[in-house]
Structure formats: C-alpha cells, structure tokens
Image (cartoon, rainbow, N blue to C red):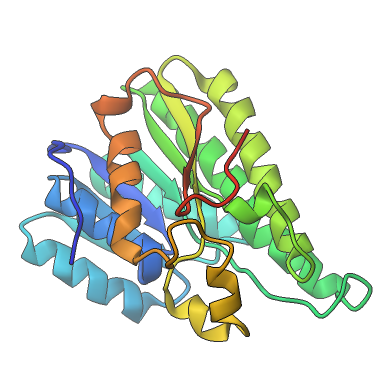
Length: 252
C-alpha cells in the first residue's frame, strides 16, 4: 500500500539520501508519483539503480548515485552530479542514518560514536548547507531532515544516536533562520516503523506498550508528512518538527 496526497511536484527535482529502502524508498516513490524527478542516493549503487528504474517506469527522470553520507567529499560530488544533470535541486531529504544499539554508555567505542555522529549529523549538515546555498541563488526550495522521536525521549542503549538526532533538530531551526525566506527547512521525527531495522529489536511486544496507537508504523505512513513539507502546502512552515510516531512523546 502506498499513501499519497493530492500534491503536484511537477517540474521539481528531489534528492533523497538513504533512498533505496525503508522510509527513504517510500518518500522517493511518493515524490515521483506526485510528478517530481528524483535522485536516489545510498552507499550501494545497485540498490539505488533498482529504485531509479522504478521511478523511470512512472515516467519521471531519475539518477542513482552512490555516496557515503559521512564523507563530505562524496556529498559535494553528489550535489555536483545532480546539479550537473538537472541544474537544480528543489527538494532535499536528509534521510540516511544509522541507529546502532549499545549495551551501555561506558561500553560505547569511540570509533562507533564518531561514525554515528558523522552519518547522522555531520553529513546532513554539509549536504543541507551545500544544497541550501544553491537554492538561495535560485528559486528556493525545501529541505526535510529525518530525525527521530528518540531525540526527544532518549533511552539507554541509543544515547549517541539520540544525541546525533537532537543535533539534527537544532540544525533544522538554525538553518531555517539562516536560509529564510527562500528555503524552508523542517524536520520529520518518526517513531517506531516496521522497516528492516525492526528485525533487530529485542523486545518488540514490549515496545508496543509505549505506543498509544498500539502498533508500529508502516513505511508508507511517512509519506503524508513528506509530501506536505515538500510541496507548496507548507509554504509558511519552516523550522518545524513534525512527529509521526503513533502518539509517543512528541517535540515540545
């Protein structure tokens, strides 16, 4: 099942990181269904190419570009590639990330800590900054950062992850002010979604007890918020943090 809203993104281009699976895949396909051309990026080129083929089958243009989000040089090359092909990026979704679970804070290794911060915050910061400055020089655009409700209510085991997403939330507010009025910068904070990551949850039934709606989200249920923020429907929305988590603790 694919959720959609009646929005028109015809003539616009989108770049979605982590767009080959999970929530990123659903957003990439939704933008294409709404009329946008979509560049799909992740570490694995073959996975991006499969999604790009599906987007082209919908009659839209698509690019598949392999890039490691934690590497600034690769992100700069990614922006250059999309601009070189299409001359613009109207919508950026910073979706790629990692969420390792650690036995304790004391047992967290420095290399893993640095990797989590690089992928979840440093990379999105660089990519948003590079894209936003080009948007400002052109017709503007929308940047959507995919955070987590774990940044609002951190729990043991995911503290470095939660901190990296909290930094992303702060980045959204700062960049919304820096690049206004031509660029809108917003956050979506998902709760617990039944993506491939859910296979590693140790106590899924226990997790359900903390969700008022009593179930995990299906990946397609991220689409409504993404289409809203990508489209002119959110023309007066910037610096916002939209929770999509079935009622668990939301941004205040």
